[in-house]
Length: 325
Image (cartoon, rainbow, N blue to C red; front, side, top):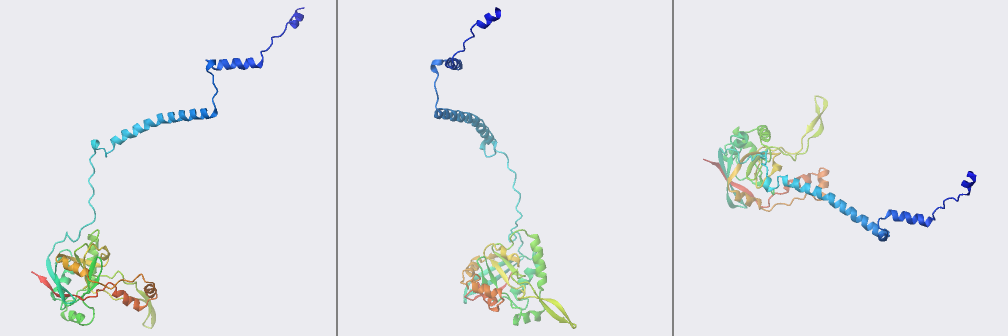
Protein backbone atom coordinates (compact mmCIF):
# COMPACT_ATOMS: atom_id res chain seq x y z
CA UNK A 1 0.00 0.00 0.00
CA UNK A 2 2.82 2.32 0.80
CA UNK A 3 4.35 1.78 -2.56
CA UNK A 4 0.99 2.42 -4.18
CA UNK A 5 0.59 5.60 -2.15
CA UNK A 6 3.97 6.79 -3.25
CA UNK A 7 3.06 5.89 -6.79
CA UNK A 8 -0.28 7.77 -6.60
CA UNK A 9 1.41 10.98 -5.19
CA UNK A 10 1.52 13.57 -7.97
CA UNK A 11 5.01 14.67 -8.96
CA UNK A 12 6.20 18.26 -8.49
CA UNK A 13 5.26 20.24 -11.50
CA UNK A 14 8.25 22.19 -13.03
CA UNK A 15 7.99 25.88 -13.61
CA UNK A 16 7.41 27.07 -17.10
CA UNK A 17 10.44 28.26 -19.05
CA UNK A 18 9.36 31.92 -19.05
CA UNK A 19 9.27 32.00 -15.22
CA UNK A 20 12.79 30.51 -14.96
CA UNK A 21 14.14 33.24 -17.28
CA UNK A 22 12.35 36.00 -15.37
CA UNK A 23 13.71 34.73 -12.05
CA UNK A 24 17.23 34.60 -13.39
CA UNK A 25 16.89 38.14 -14.73
CA UNK A 26 15.74 39.56 -11.42
CA UNK A 27 18.67 37.88 -9.62
CA UNK A 28 21.19 39.42 -12.05
CA UNK A 29 20.13 43.09 -11.55
CA UNK A 30 19.65 44.58 -8.14
CA UNK A 31 17.11 47.10 -9.41
CA UNK A 32 14.82 45.41 -11.88
CA UNK A 33 13.10 48.65 -12.87
CA UNK A 34 16.42 50.23 -14.07
CA UNK A 35 17.42 47.37 -16.35
CA UNK A 36 18.14 48.56 -19.90
CA UNK A 37 19.57 47.15 -23.08
CA UNK A 38 22.79 48.63 -24.62
CA UNK A 39 23.43 48.71 -28.35
CA UNK A 40 26.74 47.58 -29.85
CA UNK A 41 27.65 51.19 -30.71
CA UNK A 42 27.13 52.36 -27.09
CA UNK A 43 29.19 49.45 -25.77
CA UNK A 44 32.03 50.27 -28.18
CA UNK A 45 32.03 53.94 -27.14
CA UNK A 46 32.07 53.03 -23.47
CA UNK A 47 34.90 50.57 -23.92
CA UNK A 48 37.00 53.12 -25.84
CA UNK A 49 36.44 55.77 -23.15
CA UNK A 50 37.55 53.37 -20.44
CA UNK A 51 40.72 52.49 -22.33
CA UNK A 52 41.57 56.17 -22.86
CA UNK A 53 41.14 56.91 -19.18
CA UNK A 54 43.31 53.94 -18.26
CA UNK A 55 46.08 54.88 -20.68
CA UNK A 56 45.97 58.52 -19.62
CA UNK A 57 46.46 57.62 -15.98
CA UNK A 58 49.39 55.39 -16.87
CA UNK A 59 51.04 58.10 -19.03
CA UNK A 60 51.02 60.73 -16.30
CA UNK A 61 53.58 58.92 -14.18
CA UNK A 62 56.26 58.52 -16.91
CA UNK A 63 55.74 62.16 -17.88
CA UNK A 64 56.43 63.27 -14.34
CA UNK A 65 59.48 61.01 -14.22
CA UNK A 66 60.83 62.50 -17.48
CA UNK A 67 60.36 66.01 -16.09
CA UNK A 68 62.21 65.05 -12.95
CA UNK A 69 65.07 63.61 -14.96
CA UNK A 70 65.20 66.69 -17.19
CA UNK A 71 65.75 68.82 -14.11
CA UNK A 72 68.87 66.78 -13.37
CA UNK A 73 70.43 67.34 -16.82
CA UNK A 74 73.39 69.78 -17.08
CA UNK A 75 71.40 72.02 -19.47
CA UNK A 76 69.38 73.23 -16.50
CA UNK A 77 70.95 76.54 -15.43
CA UNK A 78 70.08 75.83 -11.80
CA UNK A 79 71.98 72.55 -11.76
CA UNK A 80 75.06 73.05 -13.97
CA UNK A 81 78.02 70.71 -13.68
CA UNK A 82 81.62 71.77 -14.37
CA UNK A 83 82.61 70.95 -17.96
CA UNK A 84 85.82 69.10 -18.73
CA UNK A 85 88.52 71.22 -20.38
CA UNK A 86 88.85 70.63 -24.12
CA UNK A 87 91.95 68.86 -25.33
CA UNK A 88 94.29 71.05 -27.37
CA UNK A 89 94.11 70.53 -31.14
CA UNK A 90 97.01 68.82 -32.88
CA UNK A 91 96.94 71.38 -35.67
CA UNK A 92 99.96 73.67 -35.47
CA UNK A 93 100.16 77.09 -37.08
CA UNK A 94 103.61 76.52 -38.56
CA UNK A 95 103.83 80.04 -39.94
CA UNK A 96 103.32 81.94 -36.68
CA UNK A 97 105.40 79.65 -34.44
CA UNK A 98 108.71 80.03 -36.30
CA UNK A 99 111.54 82.45 -35.59
CA UNK A 100 112.52 84.85 -38.38
CA UNK A 101 116.31 85.00 -38.81
CA UNK A 102 116.62 86.90 -42.11
CA UNK A 103 114.52 89.25 -44.19
CA UNK A 104 114.40 89.40 -47.98
CA UNK A 105 112.56 91.69 -50.40
CA UNK A 106 111.03 91.22 -53.85
CA UNK A 107 110.03 94.15 -56.08
CA UNK A 108 107.36 93.11 -58.59
CA UNK A 109 105.98 94.63 -61.80
CA UNK A 110 103.06 93.71 -64.06
CA UNK A 111 103.69 94.41 -67.76
CA UNK A 112 106.51 96.77 -66.77
CA UNK A 113 104.44 98.72 -64.22
CA UNK A 114 105.79 98.48 -60.62
CA UNK A 115 103.14 97.34 -58.14
CA UNK A 116 105.15 97.31 -54.91
CA UNK A 117 107.55 95.42 -52.65
CA UNK A 118 107.12 92.15 -50.75
CA UNK A 119 109.15 91.63 -47.56
CA UNK A 120 109.68 87.98 -46.55
CA UNK A 121 110.93 86.65 -43.21
CA UNK A 122 113.01 83.45 -43.50
CA UNK A 123 113.05 80.57 -40.98
CA UNK A 124 116.76 79.98 -40.62
CA UNK A 125 116.38 77.86 -37.47
CA UNK A 126 113.64 75.42 -38.49
CA UNK A 127 114.39 75.27 -42.25
CA UNK A 128 118.11 76.10 -42.60
CA UNK A 129 118.68 74.37 -45.96
CA UNK A 130 115.64 75.88 -47.67
CA UNK A 131 116.06 79.38 -46.26
CA UNK A 132 119.77 79.37 -47.17
CA UNK A 133 118.97 78.36 -50.75
CA UNK A 134 116.30 81.07 -51.07
CA UNK A 135 118.54 83.79 -49.58
CA UNK A 136 121.42 82.82 -51.92
CA UNK A 137 119.11 83.09 -54.93
CA UNK A 138 117.62 86.38 -53.76
CA UNK A 139 121.01 87.97 -53.05
CA UNK A 140 122.75 86.52 -56.12
CA UNK A 141 125.33 84.67 -54.03
CA UNK A 142 124.54 81.47 -55.97
CA UNK A 143 125.74 83.11 -59.20
CA UNK A 144 122.14 83.56 -60.39
CA UNK A 145 119.11 85.28 -58.86
CA UNK A 146 115.37 85.73 -59.18
CA UNK A 147 115.86 89.09 -60.83
CA UNK A 148 113.94 89.43 -64.14
CA UNK A 149 112.27 86.02 -63.61
CA UNK A 150 108.49 85.62 -63.90
CA UNK A 151 105.55 84.27 -61.94
CA UNK A 152 104.27 81.42 -64.10
CA UNK A 153 101.16 80.21 -62.28
CA UNK A 154 98.32 81.98 -60.47
CA UNK A 155 95.92 79.79 -58.55
CA UNK A 156 92.96 80.76 -56.32
CA UNK A 157 94.95 79.94 -53.16
CA UNK A 158 98.54 80.79 -54.12
CA UNK A 159 100.86 82.30 -56.72
CA UNK A 160 103.88 80.42 -58.07
CA UNK A 161 107.19 81.78 -59.32
CA UNK A 162 108.93 79.93 -62.14
CA UNK A 163 112.32 79.96 -60.44
CA UNK A 164 115.47 79.32 -62.45
CA UNK A 165 115.89 77.16 -65.49
CA UNK A 166 117.63 73.85 -64.98
CA UNK A 167 119.29 74.27 -68.35
CA UNK A 168 120.91 77.04 -70.39
CA UNK A 169 122.53 80.15 -68.97
CA UNK A 170 121.06 79.81 -65.47
CA UNK A 171 122.41 76.29 -65.00
CA UNK A 172 125.85 77.22 -66.37
CA UNK A 173 126.16 80.24 -64.08
CA UNK A 174 125.20 78.17 -61.04
CA UNK A 175 127.72 75.46 -61.87
CA UNK A 176 130.49 77.97 -62.53
CA UNK A 177 130.24 79.37 -58.99
CA UNK A 178 130.25 75.91 -57.39
CA UNK A 179 127.35 76.87 -55.13
CA UNK A 180 124.90 74.21 -56.21
CA UNK A 181 122.58 72.82 -53.54
CA UNK A 182 121.39 69.23 -54.07
CA UNK A 183 117.64 68.79 -54.21
CA UNK A 184 117.96 65.74 -51.96
CA UNK A 185 118.82 67.94 -48.98
CA UNK A 186 115.63 69.94 -49.51
CA UNK A 187 113.54 66.76 -49.70
CA UNK A 188 115.06 65.48 -46.43
CA UNK A 189 114.23 68.79 -44.74
CA UNK A 190 110.68 68.59 -46.13
CA UNK A 191 110.32 65.09 -44.61
CA UNK A 192 111.40 66.38 -41.19
CA UNK A 193 109.02 69.32 -41.45
CA UNK A 194 106.11 67.03 -42.31
CA UNK A 195 106.82 64.85 -39.27
CA UNK A 196 107.18 67.83 -36.93
CA UNK A 197 104.10 69.80 -37.98
CA UNK A 198 100.61 68.28 -37.76
CA UNK A 199 98.02 69.97 -39.93
CA UNK A 200 98.32 72.50 -42.74
CA UNK A 201 101.79 74.00 -43.10
CA UNK A 202 101.18 76.21 -46.12
CA UNK A 203 98.84 78.65 -44.42
CA UNK A 204 98.06 82.15 -45.68
CA UNK A 205 101.18 84.35 -46.10
CA UNK A 206 103.52 81.32 -46.19
CA UNK A 207 106.47 81.24 -48.60
CA UNK A 208 107.57 77.77 -49.77
CA UNK A 209 110.09 76.18 -52.12
CA UNK A 210 108.77 73.43 -54.39
CA UNK A 211 110.89 70.33 -53.80
CA UNK A 212 108.66 67.62 -55.28
CA UNK A 213 106.24 67.26 -58.17
CA UNK A 214 103.13 65.40 -56.93
CA UNK A 215 101.56 65.48 -60.39
CA UNK A 216 104.52 63.70 -61.97
CA UNK A 217 103.40 60.41 -63.58
CA UNK A 218 104.89 57.12 -62.33
CA UNK A 219 108.03 55.81 -64.07
CA UNK A 220 107.64 53.59 -67.10
CA UNK A 221 109.44 50.26 -67.60
CA UNK A 222 111.71 49.81 -70.59
CA UNK A 223 114.24 47.27 -71.89
CA UNK A 224 117.89 48.38 -71.85
CA UNK A 225 120.85 46.49 -73.35
CA UNK A 226 123.69 46.27 -70.84
CA UNK A 227 126.71 44.03 -71.34
CA UNK A 228 125.05 42.15 -74.13
CA UNK A 229 121.98 41.43 -72.00
CA UNK A 230 118.52 42.96 -71.92
CA UNK A 231 117.55 44.39 -68.55
CA UNK A 232 114.37 46.07 -67.32
CA UNK A 233 114.90 49.68 -66.26
CA UNK A 234 112.61 52.49 -65.12
CA UNK A 235 112.23 55.57 -67.28
CA UNK A 236 110.91 58.59 -65.41
CA UNK A 237 108.54 60.84 -67.34
CA UNK A 238 108.53 64.59 -66.93
CA UNK A 239 111.11 67.04 -65.67
CA UNK A 240 112.24 67.14 -62.08
CA UNK A 241 112.00 70.31 -60.02
CA UNK A 242 115.32 71.98 -59.22
CA UNK A 243 114.36 73.52 -55.89
CA UNK A 244 114.21 77.13 -57.13
CA UNK A 245 110.47 77.54 -57.79
CA UNK A 246 108.62 79.08 -54.85
CA UNK A 247 105.05 79.86 -53.91
CA UNK A 248 103.33 82.53 -51.80
CA UNK A 249 100.03 81.47 -50.26
CA UNK A 250 97.09 83.83 -50.56
CA UNK A 251 94.96 81.51 -48.42
CA UNK A 252 95.50 78.27 -46.56
CA UNK A 253 96.79 75.86 -49.23
CA UNK A 254 96.90 72.27 -47.94
CA UNK A 255 97.37 71.09 -51.55
CA UNK A 256 100.95 72.42 -51.38
CA UNK A 257 101.94 70.39 -48.32
CA UNK A 258 102.78 67.35 -50.47
CA UNK A 259 105.28 69.23 -52.64
CA UNK A 260 106.49 72.46 -50.97
CA UNK A 261 108.90 73.19 -48.11
CA UNK A 262 107.87 76.19 -46.00
CA UNK A 263 110.87 78.51 -45.60
CA UNK A 264 109.28 81.79 -44.45
CA UNK A 265 106.28 84.09 -44.42
CA UNK A 266 105.28 87.48 -45.80
CA UNK A 267 105.90 90.23 -43.26
CA UNK A 268 104.86 93.19 -45.42
CA UNK A 269 103.37 93.68 -48.88
CA UNK A 270 100.56 91.13 -48.81
CA UNK A 271 98.54 93.61 -50.88
CA UNK A 272 101.14 93.18 -53.65
CA UNK A 273 100.63 89.40 -53.54
CA UNK A 274 96.87 89.90 -53.80
CA UNK A 275 97.43 92.19 -56.79
CA UNK A 276 99.36 89.36 -58.48
CA UNK A 277 96.51 86.99 -57.72
CA UNK A 278 94.08 89.27 -59.60
CA UNK A 279 95.96 89.04 -62.92
CA UNK A 280 93.93 87.26 -65.62
CA UNK A 281 95.13 83.79 -66.52
CA UNK A 282 94.59 81.07 -69.13
CA UNK A 283 91.41 79.25 -68.24
CA UNK A 284 91.84 75.67 -67.12
CA UNK A 285 90.17 73.23 -69.52
CA UNK A 286 90.80 69.82 -67.99
CA UNK A 287 87.08 68.99 -68.17
CA UNK A 288 87.06 69.07 -71.96
CA UNK A 289 86.46 65.62 -73.52
CA UNK A 290 89.08 66.38 -76.19
CA UNK A 291 91.71 67.16 -73.55
CA UNK A 292 90.82 64.02 -71.59
CA UNK A 293 91.12 61.84 -74.68
CA UNK A 294 94.47 63.40 -75.64
CA UNK A 295 95.81 63.01 -72.11
CA UNK A 296 94.64 59.40 -72.00
CA UNK A 297 96.47 58.39 -75.17
CA UNK A 298 99.60 60.31 -74.16
CA UNK A 299 99.41 63.08 -76.74
CA UNK A 300 102.25 65.57 -76.15
CA UNK A 301 99.97 68.44 -77.14
CA UNK A 302 97.86 67.74 -74.06
CA UNK A 303 100.97 67.98 -71.87
CA UNK A 304 101.92 71.31 -73.46
CA UNK A 305 98.37 72.62 -73.05
CA UNK A 306 98.27 71.54 -69.40
CA UNK A 307 101.42 73.51 -68.67
CA UNK A 308 99.70 76.61 -70.01
CA UNK A 309 96.70 76.38 -67.69
CA UNK A 310 96.52 79.15 -65.05
CA UNK A 311 99.42 81.04 -66.63
CA UNK A 312 99.03 84.85 -66.49
CA UNK A 313 98.41 86.72 -69.73
CA UNK A 314 100.50 89.60 -68.40
CA UNK A 315 104.22 89.40 -67.59
CA UNK A 316 104.56 89.40 -63.80
CA UNK A 317 108.28 89.81 -63.06
CA UNK A 318 110.60 90.35 -60.13
CA UNK A 319 112.46 93.51 -61.13
CA UNK A 320 114.73 93.61 -58.10
CA UNK A 321 115.43 91.43 -55.05
CA UNK A 322 117.90 91.08 -52.22
CA UNK A 323 118.47 90.66 -48.48
CA UNK A 324 117.69 93.30 -45.85
CA UNK A 325 119.91 94.02 -42.88
